[in-house]
Length: 260
Image 1 (cartoon, one colour):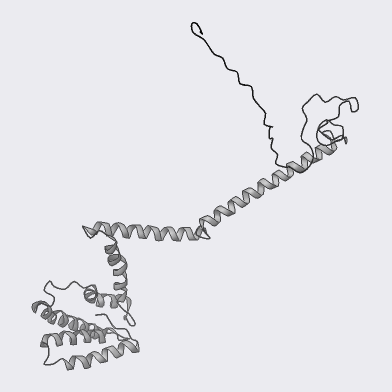
Image 2 (spheres, rainbow, N blue to C red; image 1 turned 180 degrees about the vertical axis):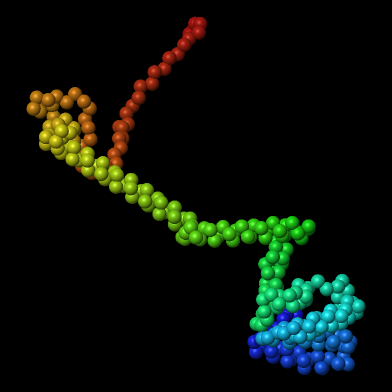
């Protein structure tokens, strides 16, 4: 049962409850009808826009009658273990809350059911069903920490995009900087080859203004005693294939004693 708010739909439910209780006479125990009637009286009083001291006294009277007559469900065996329902327990606190916060008009007690699902039912299903209380408390603690971490990460902008996308962006930035630095190095090398290390226009590996290796000997009285360098042009893949030829096999035979 829930406390009814002041909407048209719930007003229709209350009116239907009055009609329903009158049709039960002669079919169920009279205390059951009195229990439902007391609860409806409590709902009618609690949903008023203005509550006075007399209204609060009538609210307490209706609640006492409800608690008195509902024992028929325990005595008859419908609920032999007693009553431990959060919504019915919350009825005891209505007068105190009304005095502190005002009339609870348009209030619906379904919030307790929604929190019960989140805090009890779902953790119970995730537990092993054996001594599940500690497991449920651990699950709720972890869920609270995850929710707090999500809020913190969202405020920092850490949940935008995906890990794969961020990794790709990082690689693109690093590769872009490497390509830029390689291009700058190549341009500097080309400038040095064309202008020379001292900027006098004598480029090339030997400073004679020629690119690539100085393969001619005796050019301008210079002799290239070093090994040939790279030749200008686009880079190509090369391989060396050696010609097949006969090999010489040396055999040595050692004789022990007389060969005859």
